[in-house]
Image 1 (tube, one colour):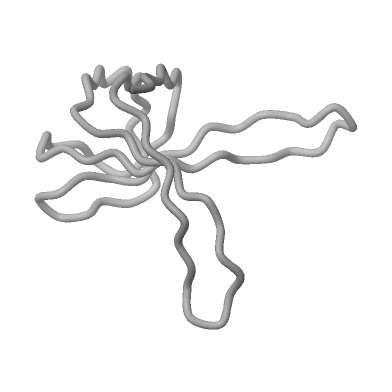
Image 2 (image 1 turned 30 degrees about the horizontal axis):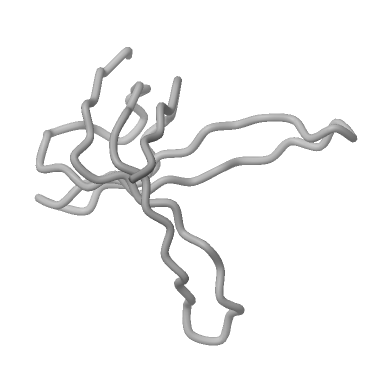
Length: 85
């Protein structure tokens, strides 16, 4: 089982009563701005725009939207969440 620690993630949207999607920003080696997205599964109340630290069980699932290529979605289960802002 793999665990993940995510620092300073911004909540992008809420899945009512189930969790939320959060992102972290970083720069690539060539200087481009990028974001990583995480689906956090918890009933804990948070708000869009909150900044959080999250740790929990890491899973990766292959997902796709209609008409798009499959992609790996990062999920965090049984999370511990600390709201920073």
